[in-house]
Image (cartoon, rainbow, N blue to C red; front, side, top):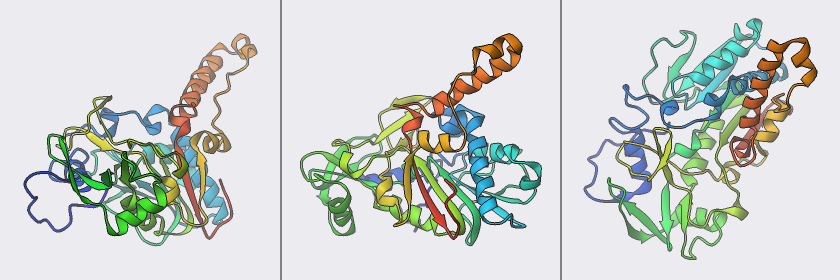
Length: 330
């Protein structure tokens, strides 16, 4: 999810910058993420949330640690950014000990309508609440915060059919961001101007007064920016050409190092989940002889954990962790 279209002014005819095109295609009227009749993200691409309930259990463990660091307050906030159809927040509540779950104030943040049948305890809202004491968790949100694209030092303009043409020279705050965070941006390749993601994350993480703010996403670092960018689309489980007409997801990897605050920690999903107890180790063969059913269950869990932590896959996702007013919990 992201901000709305803003002023409500009429859309200009012809090509526009990618940021405006993404905003309209993803979050405008009948946009990819907000149309009520759509299947939600799970219908188009596979995230860690959809890969295994072990992911929600790991987030629940992280929330339990935050709860301990806060001293077990009467109310513990859990904010699920870009909640989709509520799969993660539902799984987290189910994985918590009953006594902890009873104290949780759950918020699902998304611009899409509230899904039918969602747990009535969950407050569905378009923006995160202020004054959060607990955990704010943003799984694959920032990659869908719209951003502009530059090529050969100029903005890239795009039509609704996905055709592109050069725009004006990149200037001002966008140019400053590229100079700091995207080396070689004027050397003939493409660059994705991540300044809106920095601002979106700063605003979201700033809602946490005590606790933890975590962003999880496809990511790259300053020294390894892709020379031709990462902008792409997804539809029906397949990667497709990014066409900003509302028919597909339009996404780009995140410069998490640019988003990070001064005391933030950056780590891979593989490292984060290992610390939270998710392991892809196979169960001992001796268990197959003593308890075959338990062995099969453990083997299935190991396979799911292996997918969540795989090199070259979900395990390479970046975790940006910002702690506010508590000791280290991850």
